[in-house]
Length: 297
Image 1 (cartoon, rainbow, N blue to C red):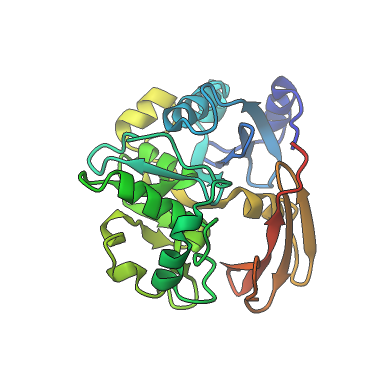
Image 2 (cartoon, rainbow, N blue to C red):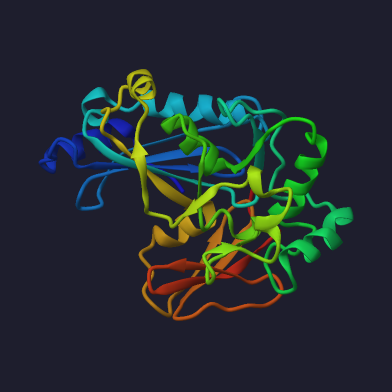
C-alpha cells in the first residue's frame, strides 16, 4: 500500500470541509513496518504515512515507538479532529506482557514461528478442526511463552491488542479476528475446547468483535500524542482482513492481497472449515480464506 505526499493530502482534507471530531485513524502493523491513514466522513484519505520498525519486528517497545512517531507527525489541526482510531496487526504475532503495566517481558513470538513439539497439546486443548489446533498457530506460541514464564504472571496479546492496551492503559481486551488462531470460536463466542478452563485462561484477553468501542484514550496518552481526550479506541482486526476490507468487498467477492504473504479471502454467507482455511465474522457475513508463505516482501 502506498500513500500520496502528506502535504498534498492535508490540503485535500482542508478543501473537503472537515468538521472537527469527524476523522478516523487507522493504523496497520505489517511484517515490514507500520502504516497510518486518516480518513474523513466520506472515506477520503486526508493524511497517510509509514515507517519501518526501529528495532526489528519482534521488539514490542519498537511498535509503540513507531506508532507514536507516526501519530505525532500528523499535522496538529488534523490530530485535533480524530474521533476514533483502530489498529490492525499480524494475526499470529504474540507478545507476553506484564498484567499491571503491559510492559513486554520478552521479544514477541512472530506469526511465522512454529513449535512442532506443541502440536499435540494444541489439538488436545482446542479440539480437532479448530484453527488453533496447529503447531504454527498462535496457541502453540502462547503455550511456548507460558512455559518460559511459568513462574511469573503474564498476559498474552497480539500486536493490535497490545497497542490498543497501551492507548487505553488497559490491557484486558482482545478482538475476535486476531484471537481466532489463539483458539477463539466465533460461533460459540467462547474459547474452543478446554482452552478457557486451562492454565492459559488467566493470560487470555476478553474478546470483543472488531468495531467495538473499547473506551477513550487514557488522558496521559492523549496528551503525549496530541489527540483529543475523548478519542475512542476501537477493537481492531488482522492486517490481512484490514487489507480486504479496504477495497469494500461485497458478498461473494474474492480478494487477493500480495504482501509479505499472499492472502486469499472471499466474503461468504457462512463460515468455511478446512485445513488452512479460516473464517472471520463480519456482521452477517464471513471473511473466509487463508494465506500462503509465497509473498512479495
